[in-house]
Image (cartoon, rainbow over all chains, first blue to last red; front, side, top):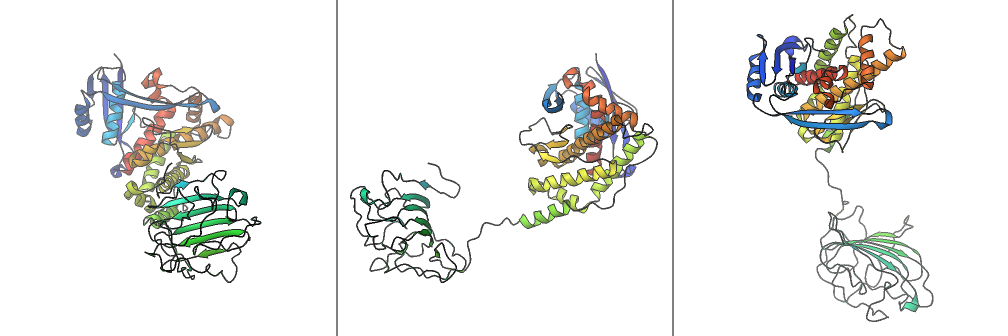
Length: 107
Length: 384
């Protein structure tokens, strides 16, 4: 079962706009775990999304030089699907105004 | 036949079938003794539109062998309206007393002096071209203010020619005021133009790239400075407040200003931004490294937060590409704290992980991880 851990960062005046860690979420299958310091708002968002199929969106360039083409993708992934953790990270980021990374550092 | 938003109707006459001046029933036109029921239609114009507005295009031949009464040849264009158009500017010519009853409009005629043996007919109404075989262009504005034909039919002659400086024989006829017809004015136009000018004006003093020995700390500092710059910029804040009503050219100017700020603070040349009308969801936009341009979808232009996120995300790609090329080409010193990362960015452009290779590989690859963090954080900071 794929496992993904992501970190959510909040930027605001209280940190002089330097990103501050707001939460750490791990997803394995349809199981979600939080770090102890995860903000209550993030937990509430996760509860709202927990049983939902979520969109996974991307646009990428394929090929090189003049042969480059734009490829679009939007798929709905269900809890337990391989990429549901990534879809959950993006949904939380969109709804809560967080920045997401997949390392403990913000970049 | 199609009509435009103004209700214009094209009516064309085939010159080989029925030249101007020839009626279907009789080869020789009868002199018109009464004001026509239609605004400016001569008796021969059987297909003229009689109600509402119409633009009439007509070719007038002069061959007497076709039975024409010697009418000069040429192209006649007439705009006929049932309403009363505003008076043209400088309207100094009196409307001929024989003005037709209901129509007003613009009449444009080309006269050729080629008619030979048959003398031209007398003018049949106040809009007729001058008698004789002269050549030229007649342009007449006809007002539809007269509600009934005056007794006695046509006026005796044409309106007097302008005194000076009118080689084309243009004549304003009729009209009830002294102001020119004016195009509709967008009340927001001047305000938007002023805002656009402010958005395209030089940037205020901004900090340059952070220069510590840790590139991640530098990147975070640059990001924070960009958020502060956007939040404190009066032109951008005005644009953000009115975003829903702004036209796309003003929004584009806002994007250009944000990109210029990002370029100044991060230390790179921002990529020009353009709207890509063919770009649809789920795409917000993309950066094309070989053409060095950022493309945004129309949907992204409409959503302010997505707009700020996408502009800063895509400009982050432009930054990565420039720094990657600098590192690869030797322009960037190997001692630069960004050097190793810049090399990884450059290589990532040629070893790009597609989502179908696994979303984790796509989302966590160096250039996307950095661009997502930049766009998401800036949007979160600007709108927090």
